[in-house]
Image (cartoon, rainbow over the protein chains, first blue to last red):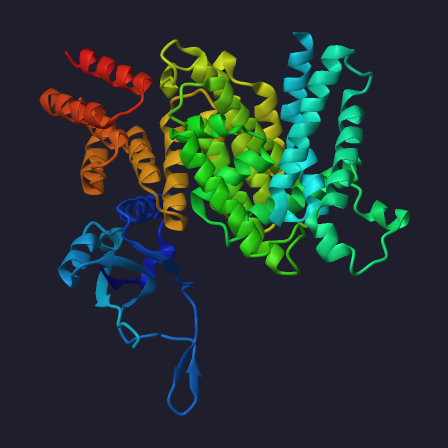
Length: 114
Length: 409
């Protein structure tokens, strides 16, 4: 069984979402993650949520508060899951609530350290 | 006859205390000497009390006799010859050091040390639970065999191996040093949790034994609260969990058919006192920032002590199961989570999720699938219930599943 990181990228505009919608979205996330975990596919129980703000360090020692990347989306969090192939990992990523807010899931294999 | 009852009660109550205190004298490597001395003490008591009468303070009597026997054994033992005699010039003052101290503080201290010693990582798995049942809970070999659904020989073998480990690894009756205590406490809590589950979910039909097991686990948990170093939020969370579960013990057992389905339980039989006690410990467990699986399981158990069947309740339970799975996956929790999903989000979503689990060794899994399919496809529902029947071992559960099949048509 291999490990894959699912990186959740989402819009910067989420902060403006009405509270009720936000609550419903959070429930969807919890149920979706619960579903992955219930299948025993969550690796090392590794779930990382990222705070929206942070710093970016660039070459030459330039530090900025963002944007992290020059696109509308930013990294919202990541989980590490267990799957045999990248296709299976991608299948598991289906139904992720990030799609409901126009986001995307990046699926990346974790490299085994020699 | 009355004497026998008293002796039986005293044996249950005092065996583990006396073994813990006496083991301090001989060292854990010779725990069987302590067991023998306690057994002999009770033998003497049986003969004496039958011939005369039960003394005024039977416990003090037992301690006094055990003390004599310990000193007698000790002076005659190899330990004395090989270890003590060459080092010290033996005199009366010295012998007091080896005299067992049956004061209530000493009993508690020794039981705590014993608990930590039994949970040494060197002794693993089933041997550890067996040893805990014998030494910490005072269960007989036949009772342990019954609880484990195995025979006496197997239990004896396991205990023998565990005791061998105690000796080989030179495990001492003392608290681990410094930060080790914190690490070891996790094992201690886990062993208590397993002891409780052994009683609560055991397949044995002997419910007196099962309840005793649960109460013994609870007692060990409470022992931990008497020491500052072990009275931490996760200890309190585990105790809360056990209280909430134990509160429903009588309700679960009330039906003729043994274990009852949750929906059929009579809430009046829930033990309100235990629920209140659980709530007190749950409050204590909320101090600090660590969120353990015991915290989450305690909250789930508390919800099960609330007799309402609302979407809100099941939504709360579902989220707790989601959290629990992220900390600690187990097939049983995955099945329970899917049941909560059914009650909170409806059967369609739950059926899709249930099909993903593929827990084909568990009869609970097929019961869940049967229940979910009963909303849409009676044939498939029956097929799944029949799969469950093929896997189930417990007679009471077999009857419940058969009834479910009957109710389909």
